[in-house]
Amino acid sequence: MIPAARNDFPEIRDAVRALVREFGDSYFREVDDQRAYPEAFVDALTKAGWMAALIPESYGGAGLGLTEASIIMEEINRAGGNSGACHGQMYNMNTLLRHGSEAQKQRFLPEIASGALRLQSMAVTEPTTGTNTTELKSRAERRGDKYVVNGQKVWISRIQHSDLMILLARTTPLDEVKKKADGLSIFLVDLQAAIGNGMEIRPIRNMVNHETNEVFFDDLELPADSLIGEEGKGFRYILDGLNAERALIAAECIGDGYWFVERAVQYGSERIVFDRPIAKNQGVQFPIAQAYMEVRAADLMRYEACRLFDAHQPCGAEANMAKHLAAESSWKAANACLQTHGGFGFAADYDVERKFRETRLYQVAPISSNLILSFVGEHVLGMPRSF
Image (cartoon, rainbow, N blue to C red; front, side, top):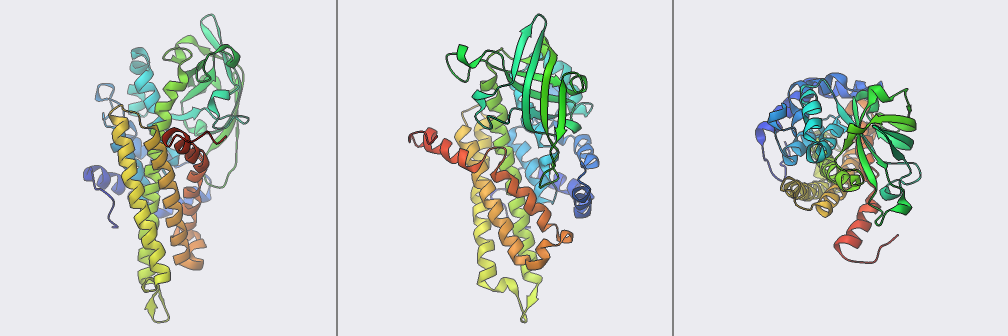
C-alpha cells in the first residue's frame, strides 16, 4: 500500500476498504459495462452504516464529521470503486442538518439513516446559468399552503436512485432584491410525489457511467413545509452543502490518485521490457513519483478544508483549493498510470481506462477548475474580478 499523507481513523479505512474489495474490480467493471447503478454496493454501504456517517446518533446515524466522511469516500475510490454513485447523500446531508427544522429532521433523518430513504440528489445547475447561481431562472411562488415551481435544471444526478432531492429556486425576483444572493430558497422535494406531477426528467447519456438528467418543472406543487430554513436565504444555506461537496470530491480524487499510483508502481515493477522492469527507467519512474507528491500535497489541503468545516469556520477557499489540487493531481496520476501500462491501459480488464474516465470528470464538475482559479484570484488574493 502506497503511504498516504496521514492515516487517520485506520479502523474506518480498513472497514471501508474491506467492504469495497468484497465486490472487487470485476463488479465495478461489469456495472460500468452495463451502464447500471451499483445498487448492491450502495445497499451494502448503507447497511454497514457508512451512508449515515454525518447523521447524529440521536437520529440513528454515526454522528461523525466531514473529515471521517471524506475518508469513507477516499477509501471507496482508492479500493477501485466510484463514490459518484452515492456521494450526494454525504454533502446534501449538511443542508438539512444545519438548516432544517427539528420537525424535518425527526421526519427524515431516521429513515435516511436506516436506508428506507435516500437523499442523493441536489438540483441547482441550470442550462443558462451554470455556476452563476444567483442568476438562476427557476421560480417557486408561494400560493397559500404550497409553493408552485416552474423552470428547468440540468446535470442533476441520481434522481432515479433517490427518494428526496434538495432544490434551489428563486422565491423573490432578482430585480426585487438588494443583493443577488437574496431571494433564493431551498426545498426538500419528495421525488415519488413530484415525478409525473409537474416534474419531468430526461436522462443524459455521458462519458462515464453516471446517472444524470435534465429536469423540467411545470407547475410542480410543493407543500409549504418542504421549505428548508427561512425563505430567501437559500443561497447562504446551500454553501454548506457546496463546501462539503468540494471537500468530499477532493477526497475521492485523492483516492483515485493513490489508486493510479499504486497500479502504476505495481505494473511498472513487474513489466519486463529489454530484460529490465520498466519502472527502472526514469522516464517511467519520475512521472509516477511526481504525481504521488502532488496527490499527497492535495491530501493535506483536504484535511484542512474538512477541519474548518467541522469547526463551523469559513472554509470556502480551502474547500475550493482542495478540490482543484486533488482533481489536477489525480488527473496527472491517471496519465502517468495509463502511460506506464501502454496499450494495456486501454484494455478494460485492467480498469485503468474506467478510472481514467471517472477521475477526468472532476476538473469540470461539480465546479470547473477555471471557476476555482477565478475565486482564489478575486476572493483570496484580492485581484479584480476576471469575469
